[in-house]
Image (cartoon, rainbow, N blue to C red):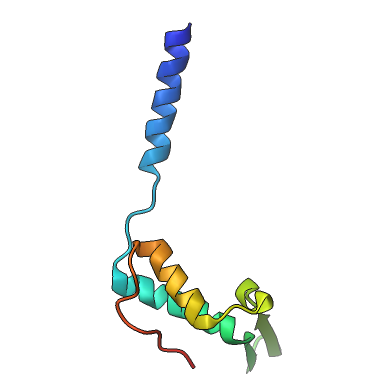
Length: 98
């Protein structure tokens, strides 16, 4: 009975380890983390206004506020930490922010 439980546990461990995310290239990590650093600079958002022949006028407003912005974190720190977390190394280039 104990051997069967150990076997099931090891099988589950193999399945979980196979679900690990693949490594990210440093350039891709920089792109992803630039977006996160931009969100730490200030609120993000957009406005959509339009019309069509079926329903007439329409519109929407989106506002985004990141937890890094609310915590008052420095966008450069957010970028560096994000790249390190994704690649295990320092950023290969400085971020391009607003």
